Image (cartoon, rainbow, N blue to C red):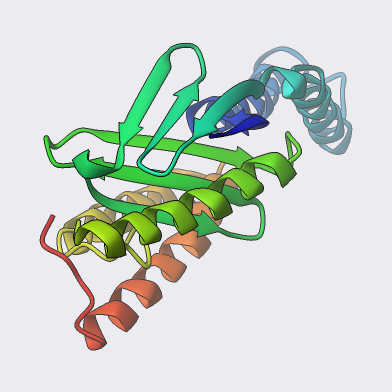
Length: 216
């Protein structure tokens, strides 16, 4: 059995921090128009609100990082975060290891329909230990697959599911609505989401053309 100590991040906390930072910008500009329109120039108001938003982000950035530990054996993985999660390989239906520019993540799907997702964003934490854990985990799962004919599926992408078409379509509609109802600087949100969404569409059609989509 091999043990690991690692840093990880919760994506929901990252989105919340970014969202609150943009809300500070929008709220600052709104207050400027109501209270300080005749005493402060628009350029100074924009600079001040962005500065306050950046300061808020920096002061709260440390809250995103979390510490975890794991124990990896030949047929199971035990992960200790706020609570202990035991991953028995025989209970796995699929797994997906994402190693992107900023985010490393592990997604697990179990035969009973439950899921487990854990990631580390390099903007907030050190990824080295977590990357080592995922590399060893993947080797152990594949060895278990071969030895036990377990038929655990390795997904090539989070968009490798057929139902991803509906998710992508819904998100695309929301982004279009966002462009229609927002103005700068809040329009930065739908602009940022649209780039990731475009990558999702490309990956989905790539996998569909290779007949690598799954039904779950």
